[in-house]
Image (tube, rainbow, N blue to C red; front, side, top):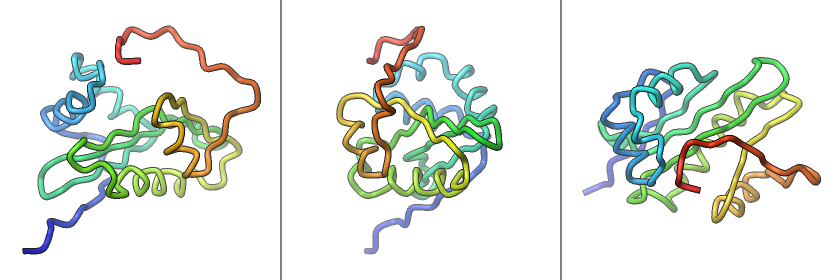
Length: 138
């Protein structure tokens, strides 16, 4: 039996249960505030989601001024589907949308640094990421 193909979508309005399950599986603290998370994704400049049948297995979003700068705050792939190129495909699609923008930004830590380097991202000079963060997952 052939594996179920992965489909990618661009809708910003995603099912709460699927989003919460994906974020919980990746141990992201925003899973604990699903209504806020859903509103944030819907307010993104763009969202790319990955589906295996009717199961949400990955997503990435972008926040942008629409002309010059884009920031990629979230990229998640369900642990059962990691290592299959899904995260890379999501980022490829997001980067393609903003290909002519002057600045693409994201914050990476841990194992994610090597992943993003493979996608062409480099450390931004001597910059230091800074935040006020309500989560506990970093």
